[in-house]
Length: 251
Image 1 (tube, rainbow, N blue to C red):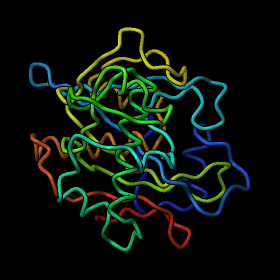
Image 2 (cartoon, rainbow, N blue to C red):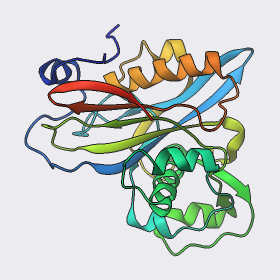
Image 3 (tube, rainbow, N blue to C red):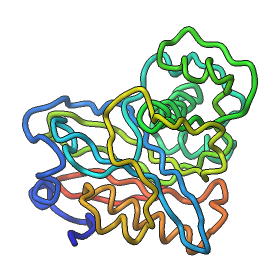
Image 4 (cartoon, rainbow, N blue to C red):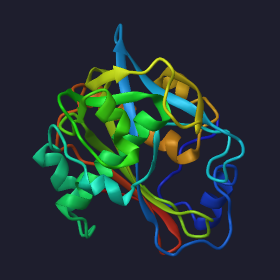
């Protein structure tokens, strides 16, 4: 099984580890905001996570098992919510020189919820009247679900290294399956993910997954061992390339 990306690796070593995950080449200098949601289900003391396989035609992580997620859309900042982020979680997203406002942090978190609906057919939130003009949120309108952010936990941040066709500044969130208000039998309206299933964390780490996904899963497993309730305000690992080396910082 390929290992996790380790602190201190050179850019060449990271490029080699991720050569099957990303299309290499001259890409954007500035990464775009993105979000991923790791849904967790605890069964008989074992933690399961929801994952799906990306179609092999995608330039970004083709054929790899991933969590639901994607780029933050400008319309996400204008969506009403049933509940806001926990203040301790918002502080982690806004602080540490990230130039992120509370509005932008909320939009990033909302994009994780939206992508989970679009890719997996799971709507996180509360049953209530809900209205939005955005075409991306009409599933929530139809099912009368107001997206809820208070159950999200910020568990990792990773910036795609330079030299990729696409670059993202991805915030990884985690939430319990109990936060899901509606599970659509037919899945989500997009076809980006297939073979969607709940997988034990240890088993998922042996799947065909991107190196950064394996790294985040390992961090999550360690956190769940120390903090089984996923308390708000927990330290958050931040992975990025600085001065030619992969670095792990803590937010």
